[in-house]
Image (tube, rainbow, N blue to C red; front, side):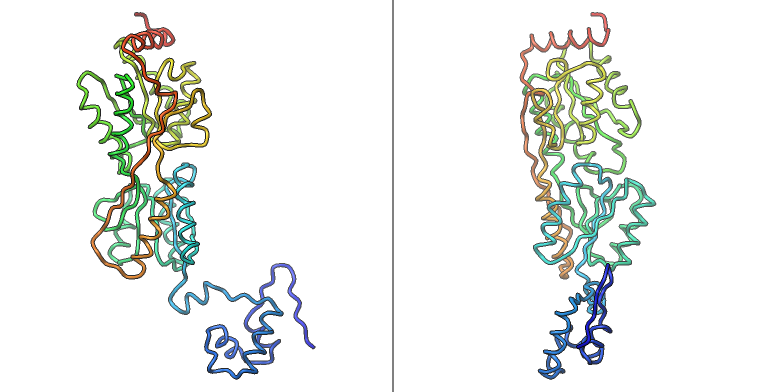
Amino acid sequence: MRQSIKTGTDRVTIAQVAREAGVSKTSVSRYLGGEFDALSVRLREQIGKTIARLGYQPSQMARGLKGGRTRLIGMLVADILNPYSVAVLHGAEAACQKHGYTLMLCNTGNDEAREKQSLAALHSYSVEGLLFNTQGRNVTPLHELGQAAFPVVLLDRHVEGCDFDLVGLDNVKAAQLATRHLLAQGYTDIALVVQSLYGVSSRQGRQAGFLQAMSERRDCHGQTLEVDVEQPGHVATVLREFFLRRARSGGRVALLAGNGMVSLQIALALQSMKLSFPDDVGLLCFDELAWSPLVGSGISTIEQPTYEIGFTAIERLLVRIQGERSVRMEMLLDGRLISRGSTAAVTAQEGRACSARLAAKLGVRA
């Protein structure tokens, strides 16, 4: 009896199966394609036993390309270092597994050139659809996908002029929830700290919700601070300038961090200035992170339904892959406020004492 020995990473081919079984490659291809009527019982048994003995596994990509289906879905994220991206990925992977698809992930690093390269790479693998968390500036590739009627679902960030479904957080509503919580806790001088707003609809939505909630309290001060988390020391510099401007107001100061990466930089900046929360400044952060309950008395957060966002986005994409051509849909999910010690309530008198303490630590004379 002839034997075939597979070593290392060698992959058994159809030609090897045909040779070992003593049949043609066409017969093996028909067997793999389920064309059993074209084969005798003897040939079917012979090919089946040979495949089992050799451990042959057909290339799913090759079979998919032949049949016009690859069961591959591409996912482009703007920044894989952002905890949000990783959390959404978990939900997207679970949905793909449920429906028999494989997810291919590309990280664009918020870079236009890398985004274009990643799109080309995914296209070369003939993905059937795309989840897209765009960097938000050069949207030409998305317009081209729209013109080609290619199935795309946007994650978190809307793109003007692109008729794609969007799945993400209701950013306006979530920012209102966060800001009203801070106001209710007695904070009167609040800064929304975000990365660049330009071209990023999710950040713009959070700013809109923040400003709307602040407008309900004319006696309070709200300000947006744009920061560069990649530039060492920039967050600390911007925060210190804000604190110095508000030190003499007598109000209670709080920060609303726009995402998890900003949250970390704020925590490091406060530590470098020897400021603590809630004694010197209140702190509420978008994104529930693993370390949020562990720092000090715990950091209050807006928890995003990240798993649900990823899972829902895949299921919506599959509907488009299957041919639905209905009007564009936005599926915006609610965030959840988790209140901890970093936003502890203060009375007006306690607020004045906190403001005086902050001014003293910053070296500002009363």
